[in-house]
Image (tube, rainbow, N blue to C red; front, top):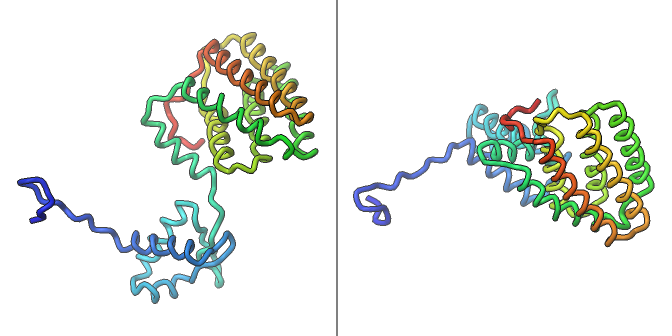
Length: 256
């Protein structure tokens, strides 16, 4: 009996599957050897010989790594496992699965956005290229046309894409991930109980005006102005979300 276990109870030792042990060792190998996306791992036969286990065990381990998005399996005579860049989509889906079982509301989301998006606005000062500026201008044009046409779906998608374009210019990978994750939730998972088209149009007009002011401040390289406008933009957006009685879908698990 384990002396550290509570009286009358025996601590059960967790048995780790062999395939999980192999997968963990491969992760460590990738880190230790400094492998990068596009680098190849040994093929199945070589891995079987190295670990002294069956083809089924190796395939199960590689499948786990493939599901994680760490490797992809190439087919053909020269196929095998190849390191691939981590996909933000996979991580986003995992976070959505976690949040599905939590109580989630817009106050929490915009509490973060009021901080993160302001930081993003300051971060991209001097980093936006002419290509970024042209895409931001075109994004605003798309929003204006869609808002006039009362195409709510296109308006909401374009509004979040404006912020995604800013993310592309940032060099803070953690900030980018968090901003893009919240943007994806607002783009994909929001429903509106209010069907007042006029309210939606006013919301769209307010966002367009904020984006125009942001673009001007960013072009001028004025970080203080960009931060102030972004903060006002986030506060305004939260207010309209409440007026439109917005909520997150009850199903955060589905991918489509």
